[in-house]
Image (cartoon, rainbow, N blue to C red; front, side):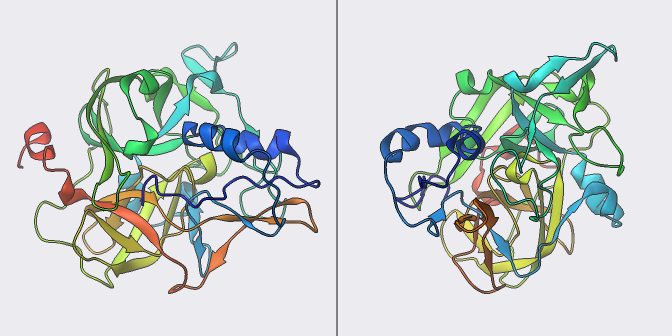
Length: 325
C-alpha cells in the first residue's frame, strides 16, 4: 500500500528504448532511487513494470466530455493535477495563460493501440479540494514543502469539451503549495498514506468535496474515481466496488487506475461522498517484446490484489480544518 512496491520495477532489455520508457517514470520522484539500484538488472521482457495500478475487466476510464452524470461532473471540478514546474511555459499568444510542455504516451514507450496514448501527459499526481484553500493528496506524492514548491496544483486540466486545448491553462487555475499541514507516507500497512496541504490562496468557483464523516463504506458498495492516470488529462472511472474493508487505514477496490491517479478522490456512487484517497495497487504495465512497447495489464473484476484506498475517516485532523458542517 502507498509506498509498498514490488522488488523488480525497472525492465532493461535489448529491445527497450530507455530514453522513452524511463521518461515516464521520472515524473514521480519515488522512482529515482530505484532506477539507480535496478538499472542494470536484465530480466524477461514479459515481466511486469511495477507502477501500482491496473485495469479491471472493461476499461471504464472516460474523459469529462463523455460523462453524463451531472454530479460526477460537479465533483470533477474540485480535482487538481500536480504538475512539475518544468512543464510550464508562459503563453506568448494568449495573455494570462500558461502552456504545458508534455509528450504523448506513445512517445513515452506505450503501444499506439492502447487507450488514450495519443493524448499528452503532464500530471504527476492527483489531489482534491476539501476547503477553500485546503487540498488532500497521497503522502507519497508530496513528501515535504520543498518538494511541493517545485510543483503547481492545476484545476481544469481536462477535456470538458472534445476539442479543448487542455495544455492551455489560465493563471487563475494554477496554485502553489504554501504549507504541508499533515504528511503520512504510508510506509507500513498500518500507516495511512495521505497529505493535507494549504494552497497559497482560496480557490474560487469550485466547491470543496463532501466527505464521509461517520460510519464506513461497506463491502460491495459501488465506487468511482477521478484523477490523472499516467499523467493524462482528468479521467473518471466507475464500474467498481469495495472488495474488502477490514480494520486498518485502507480498503481495497477494483477501480481502473494508474500512476498519476495517486491522491485522487474515491467516491461512493450512491451519495457521492468521498470515501477515500487512491494510493496504490496492482502492477499496471508489462513489456510487449513483440511490439517493443508497454501494454496495460488487465485483471478480472475479482482478480489481482486490488487498488488500495486510504479511508477518509483516517484523517482525524480534518474536522478542525474544515469544520463539522
